[in-house]
Length: 295
Length: 269
Image 1 (tube, rainbow over the protein chains, first blue to last red):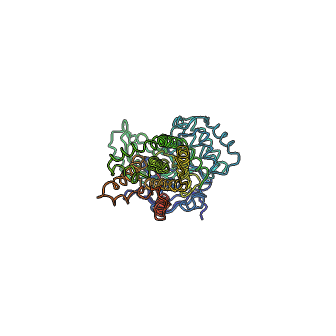
Image 2 (spheres, helix red, strand yellow):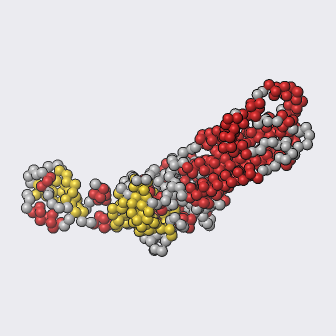
């Protein structure tokens, strides 16, 4: 038994010889808003599907709230909510019928009141048929169904797709409010901005493997810097031949930009022998950090 | 089993069940309505039947002309085919989609993330499948019974009627199990309705062709239709133990294997 809300150990999934995910190790603590970021096809949804017991792992194990996802899936699902990336509710039902159908799987006192409360927050028309809803409205239905039973853990797979900026704002505010009440949130996305804004800690997944798990702030404060050097005379970008320099770009004029992961002293020492007219060392954006990990 | 899921499945299939009940009942009523005329013109009918090759009559299920001159025999020969063939098509179409449609309609992510085990989902859907097939059989048999009572020309054996109805139900349930099993074999979720209907029709024609073609008579043993005893006018007509074992055994085995595979199936949407 672990105190982590989500814990995976060497979790792997292979499709024949092709790799879905390999040796995924995650640990999400209680009350945390944890980002899970990577491009399409990196293995985010595969990991989530294993956690939700939709697919079975080829190796390793995973637990949620201290319970094995394979052996105690029913008990786990009583206590967690899930927003899938595809929001396809039963098209023959009205929104109200669908939400009432969902809530009857749980023991929710005053369920009807809870439905009205959440539907109101998202301006959701309960009388409309699911089949008639736009993607954005179907997404709202998906969000509401995930919160009906006030879960301890919410797993979100690309939750903001289709939501307009206003609704995204309502959604994030609601999540923050639920988080303040103690809900743990596992947030999978390929949109860096929302992860940066919303999450405290992040795991970056690439080609089925976790390449970095870190606090968002720490990630930003790593030694990785964005460097722009303006030389007095025209130079080749190979002039910046020092260990730790990457992504060299010849900019306008005599400017060379790059990412630098090393000691600033070494960089300044190296440049002191050159004829430079300007030097800028900046914190890279999360996008740039992300691209650094992905190149 | 989960009652919420079971009731939703029943609701989801209510319209389809109603339509199948109506169509099969209408066919039974139309066919039974000519029984009196048929009986009043026995001589002409016999004359006509004598011109038809024996094989063609066997294809229709008429192996003994005496069968036709009793209301139950007439009902069995002319109507049970609707209940057996159409009922089996209903069962196989429903069962082949009952689990799979959650995947190709992309609703599985909602259903499988509720606090339910795979077994609970399976048994709730199985119960809904059984109930649909049972209600279809109950209703159409009831319509058949009323028709028999209205047009009968003498007493008939209610016991034999019940035996025939139970055979029909068992056949339909077996095809329900076949459809369920087929759906668990599908790797990429998509509707398999056409294929499922094809299986029923193929097995039906294997049975009928095996009856009229000596060289392939043994092939008929492959068809579940072979194991339905249609000789309703026989005084010894009853549920035969080997046939019961066949229907129940195959249905239970296929259902068990389907459950085993569903519990281990990777669900994609």
